[in-house]
Amino acid sequence: MVLTCPHCQKQHNIDENLIPPNIKKARCKYCGNQFLLPGRQETVPAAPTTIQPVKAPKGPRRIAVSISKGGVGKTTTAVNLAAGLSFAGFKVLLVDTDTQGQDSFMLGVKPKAGLTELVTEELSAEEAVTQARERLWLLAGGKSLAGIKRLIDRKDFGGELTLAEALKPIEDQYDYIIVDTSPGWDPLTVNVLFYANEVLTPVSLEVMTLQGLLEFLKSIAAIQKHRKEVSLRYILPTFMDKRVKQSMGILEKIEELYGQLLCPAIRYNVRLSEAPAYGQTIFEFAPGSPGAEDYRELVRKVAGNPKLLR
Ligand SMILES: Nc1ncnc2c1ncn2[C@@H]1O[C@H](COP(=O)(O)OP(=O)(O)OP(=O)(O)O)[C@@H](O)[C@H]1O
Ligand SMILES: [Mg+2]
Image (cartoon, rainbow, N blue to C red):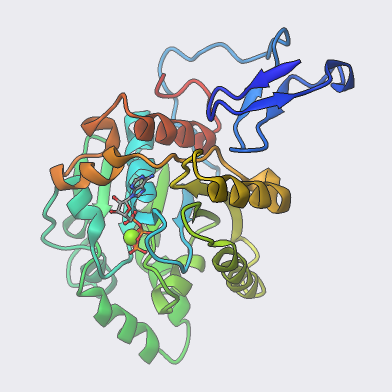
C-alpha cells in the first residue's frame, strides 16, 4: 500500500503484510512525523474537560533550547514553545540567557529587569520577572548578562550552579521552565546545562549542520560526566523545505542516527520571521500558518498530549 505522511506529504510504499498486527503507527522517514496506520485504531484516553497541568513530582520540567550553532531557530522555538504551552493551560517561565535579549522583543514586552537582576539579587524575583501573557512569564536577557558571565568566571567554586541557585526559589510556581540559550559556548551555556534536565536541539535543514550537532553532543556528554540528570531529549529539524533535496538528505541522516529523539520538523515559513516585528507569537500573528501548525505539534509532542491546542 502507499501511505502519505499527513505532515510532509511524502509517499511511502509499504508491504502491508510486513507490518505486525500490534503496530498502529508509522513514522515518516522524511520528516519524523508519526501517524496512525489506516484501519488501526489507536486507544486514546478520553479528552479531559479542563486541562490539568501535569507537574513532575520534583518541580517543573526544565527544558533548554540549545545548540552552539547560531541562527538555527533556538529563540523562535523557545518563545513559541513557551507560549504554546501557556496557551495550552500550563504556567510557563521563559528564561532568556542570551545577551541579544530577543525573547522580550519577540513577545512585544519591554522588561525593566531580568535574569541579571535576579542573579545579582538587586531585585526580588517578583520584580525581575515580567508577565508577558496570561500564564507566561519572562526572565529577560540582554546586554547586562555580560556582567553575569564575568561574575561566574570570578567564582572559585560552584560558578556553574549560579543559574540553578537563582532559579531555585521561584521555579516551583511553574509547570515548565524553557531556557533559550545564546549561540556559541560560554559560562552561561554551561550554567544552563547544569540547570536543565532536558535539552531540545534545533537543527537547521537549510545548511549542513550535522557537524554542529555532533560537536554539541560531545559538549553535552562532557557535562553529563558531572551531572547525569541532563540529557538530549528532542532533536527538532527547522527550516524544512521539502523542495530542497539537501534538506531531506540531512533529515534522513538525522533519522538514521537519532531516530527516537527526532520531532516532526518545523517547515520554512516566512510568517515565523515576520511575527517578531509585531511582538507576537506565531499563534497570535498567523494561527493558520504552517509555522503555527508545526509549533502546535511540537507543544503536543513535548507535553505528551495529542489533544492540546486542537
Ligand atoms: N522555520 C522558520 N522559517 C522561516 N524563518 C525562520 C524560521 N525559524 C526561524 N526563522 C527566522 O530565522 C532567524 C533566526 O532564527 P532565531 O533567531 O530563532 O535563531 P537562533 O538560533 O535563536 O539565532 P541565534 O543563534 O542568533 O540566537 C530569525 O529571523 C527568525 O525569525
Ligand atoms: Mg537566539
